[in-house]
Length: 298
Length: 102
Image 1 (tube, each protein chain N blue to C red):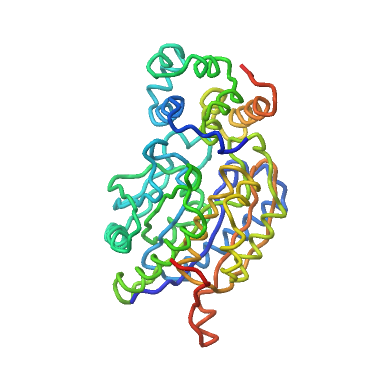
Image 2: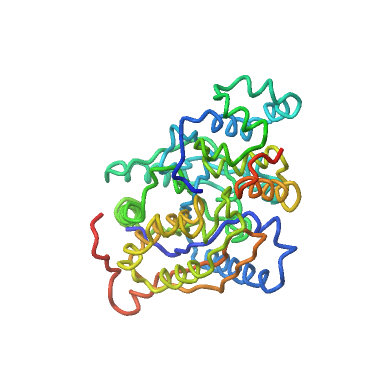
């Protein structure tokens, strides 16, 4: 039985790199505290593999043949893709892959009735993977990565119930399919509120962001699944906020448990709210219980 | 103006995807936009909207907003804090009522 030793959700707005230096100091402080804490937690988790779920952003597939989940099976992941370099403003990076875990993920999800697609070559990465790699210092951590790029924006979008069910299957797969003793880290990359390409491009829904961070840190997954609807996320920023569904996959895998945030910042030039949550993977162990399941079916 | 008008069959989606994936096509687009547009099965009103930089019209036809943002960067600039900011402002100006911003 493998175990999940790290689980977090964090934004990947490109401005967090390219526009950070020009941001007010209080905003820079939140970014530094947030990603510094995540980098420290990842390094301390001594994980054998990091599986990152993130919005694909229409970066790898055409709109008429769009996978809901696309696994990167490469032995090494390189980014960012050429066109996104000036936009993100980050250096090139290389992160070791985990082809065997990627293969187990594809096979295990297929057996569990969840269709995922996979690519053996290098996927095209934009801010979805590039921002966490840089800000959470994933190169330094040296943990092999399996990126899973998901459909958060091309209708029909897998909703919160579907993504949670995918997460529950992922949790079962980690427990039952991966090698005994393997330590697995999970990251949901995306959000908070934003509307990329929309008429409200500079809109940040601070009330939504604070509500969401409090909710996912509370561990109340019944309420999460009731209230985090696609309609609510679209109202908080069309075509962008729904990438919080990557966090929902992680939450499905870990089950209800508390988490903590590292502050919140809304900076207009980022065009995205900033805040992360790190879930306490020891919480239920300390209280003598086991992660429960909200009242829904997978 | 969200995803409710999304039309996956719109050829402009392919144009944008190909431009961001293919540096040589971007060079050709910069040198002779018309010759690149000729390669795609664009509707007449779709082509006119691209030429006029009328993002609002393209969105009304069903262009996915995320790719609309990328089209704006392909046209007006893609560098953080510089051309990309111009692109965002032009796009918002079009979508909020001005229409053509060419």
